[in-house]
Length: 332
Image (cartoon, rainbow, N blue to C red):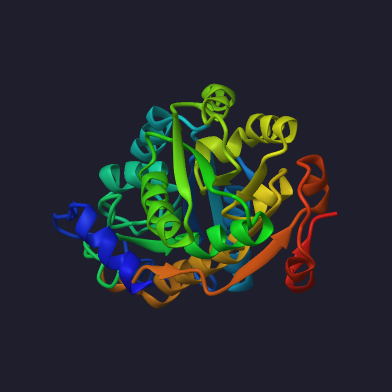
């Protein structure tokens, strides 16, 4: 991981967040359990299983800490439907909405919130590289009113899994959104890992979900497809999976929701747990007065190997028994 962090720091210029901090400290107003009701805004970039799970996990953590919706907690949940202008509008509305804390789910929503909201705590989740996205000065010391959890996934291990399932694979296609920094970071990590594994990465970019089918077709003669945690592609995954099934091409994902939606396997993040981790950070801010500026960005604490035998059969792929035996979860 040290090599990866060094690579990312060297490759991307850091956009430091400046300006005076005037956070609305909920600990001073007695918000939450035993005090007045608090108001939390949630801006989710698009609806798909991974981001939905992260949002649900966040709310579960607040509930476990004594924040009960309808009693001492009010949520305002908004979804940008995968459109950056919508994310910007939501963030602008939240900036003057009297919120105690805002959760931004996925990189585009987090970038919008960071630009628009400067005087209340903002937490992000499902952001691959917060530094590259210009959200924080550093993961160790964010420096402003925003911090959260990164969904940086074990790309090298995921490609190793791909080669374990398909040992003869040489060309691996990746379809990703040209507008998502998180995807660009993952593609660079995939290229780095591919060299050590003797793989060639073939890229195709999309601007929206309607481009996925054409982009997947344009990959040409690839032996497998790797799906990063790209919000546009994951939301429109069915189009990619359909072509992979028609051509008997292995699809390996970067998280469990992708496998549930038709990929063959992953060793990746549990987004529900990542959301809970973010919710626990929110509790420390709301109840204990923790300062986002000095609260380090956190990463997932554990990964899981998930397989989908049905998807493998539809793609003409046989999952090795060694993978089956160590799987944490099997999609039936």
